[in-house]
Length: 266
Image 1 (cartoon, rainbow, N blue to C red):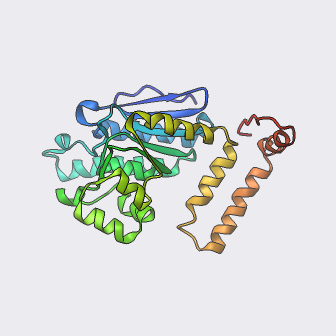
Image 2: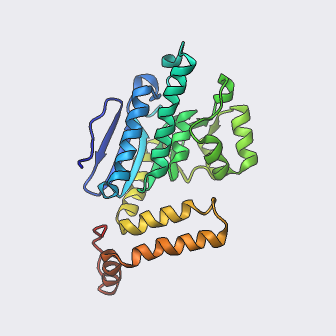
Image 3: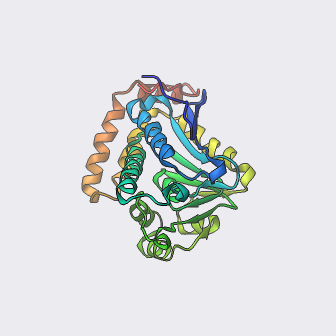
C-alpha cells in the first residue's frame, strides 16, 4: 500500500535516508489544529503502523519559526455544541493512539510555541529537541477544560508527578531551558540550527537496523508500565525477534569486515 504524502494541513516527505518529516502547516493560525489537521495527523501516523518499513525515523515540526503548534484552533471551536466538541475530540484521541502505536521512532523538533495540544503532540513523540526560543504550556485548565491528548499521562513520565502538577494546574508557560532542566527536552539549540541537529540524530537512528530499533522502542515503552521482572521478560521476547533477522547477521559481518552495515529491515 503506497504511503499517502499529499495533505491539506500537513506536509509529509520521506528522504532517501528514510527519515520522514511531518510538518504542521497552518502558519496563518500558528499551526493550530483544526478538525482536518487532527484527522490528517491521525491518518499520517496510522500509515507507519501499517507499513513500518516506509520510514526508519519520523521528525515532527511546524512551519515557520514562531509556532510548533498552539493546540486546537479555538476559533473553530467557538460556538461548538457539546456533541460536536466530543466528536472532534474523538479524532484527537485516535491521533494520539496512532502516535502511541507507531513502531517507528518519532522526534519532535519544536520550533516555537508548543501550547496545549501542541505540547501534547511533542510529549507523544519519543523525545524532543527544541529551539532556544520555544515556549511550552498546558493551558487547558485556564480555558475550562483539562489536557485530553495524554498530557496528564506523558508529562508526569517526563518530569515527575510533582512538577507535572505544577505545570498543568497553573497553566503557566515555561521556556525550553526549563524543559531541558526538568528532563522533558533532550536538547536545546539556536533556532536556525534546530532541524540540522534533529536530522543528524534522526539519520543516526535511521542508519541502524530497523527491526532492532522498533523492538528496542517497544521494549522501552514497557519500562514504566510493568514491574521489572515482567518488563525483562518482554525485553527478551523483543530481543529474540531480532536474532532471526538477516540484519543481525549483517551487523556482525560488517563489524568483522570493518565496513558500514547495509540494513534492509529483514
